[in-house]
Every structure is written in structure tokens, then in C-alpha cells.
Image 1 (tube, rainbow, N blue to C red):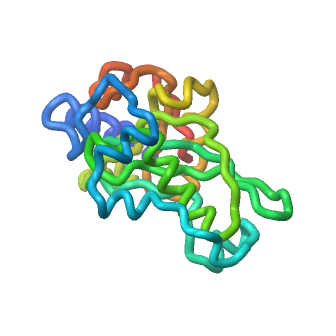
Image 2 (image 1 turned 135 degrees about the vertical axis):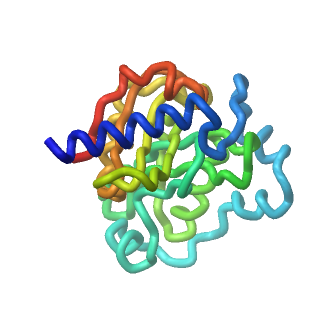
Image 3 (image 1 turned 30 degrees about the vertical axis):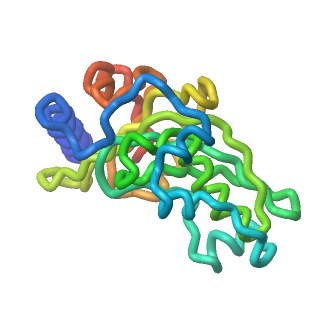
Length: 209
């Protein structure tokens, strides 16, 4: 019961922060660009990050995640940004789901196709293939006053570029909850913009324990 009260407090503080100033985030935009349009709009340094080099070495997914120092979940420490859920495949046919968030420093120029390109570049240099399953928005709050949990992560919305995916946010929620056990993690298929986290606050389902 004490844990439930702590999680409720964490959510309440997050909702109040969203209703007030909100986290540092990417402003909402209604139009999704193609990969090419997004890449054209961003800086030369960022475009270098999106280039897909020839494979350095062929790794299994297990080696990629445990020996190459890569993560199944790559998200920003705070803010509201778009993300993609991808299925990675190695040369043995083994598959795993991965979450890639947009870097906050790219601002509104980072849409879902750019997030997909970022993780594709990382995977392909190790001989791994990937397919985008879908995407949405992540808003991550760090709440210092939470008694048990350090903060709140909300996964919601959808990707206009890759289309709606009924279970993407739920599956991403499970991955993020496993990667960040100190957070209250929840998901919803409602909304699209940052403000929708508060607007649809009663539609979220927790996936953290």
C-alpha cells in the first residue's frame, strides 16, 4: 500500500508539472517529415550521425547488447520526444525489440524517421538488420520528491510516418520498465502531442511493478 501511495504521488507531481511548465521538450508539430526531408533540415554534424557505414563486424544480438555496450532502450534523461520501436535481427535469425528515442538536442527536427535512422546506423555497422514496428511519444519526468520511485515515464501517441500500432506503446512500456526499474512507467494509445499526457491522464496503464 505504501508503494502504491508513492507511485500515485509521483504521477500527481508529474501531472502538475505538465499542467504548469512541463519538462524540457521538443515543441509539438503536426506534420511528420520523410527521412529525406528530416535529414535535409538538420545540421551537417547530425547528418553524419545518420550515415550508415559498412559493417565493421557481424555480431549476434547477444554480443551486440552485452559485448558491444549497446542498449535495448535508448532514451533521453528528461523531456518529451518521439520514439520508434524496432525489431532487430542478426545473421542467425534471432530477433529482439528495441526502443530508440529522439535526442532532445535535435529539437523538432528529430521526427520518427530520424529516430529510426539513428538506431539503423548503430545496428547495421555490426551487420544487424532492423524493421520499424511503430512509434509514439515518450515523456520522462525526474521527480525528486517521489518516495520510492525516482520519476515517471509516459509512453503514448503514435507515429504519423509509420502508422498506428495497437500494441507498440505497451511493448515499449515493458522494455522501458525493465531498463528503468526505479521509475513509474505507463502507457496509453491516446494523444499525440506533449500536452496530451495530461489531457488523457486517466487513460494510462502502468507496466512497472
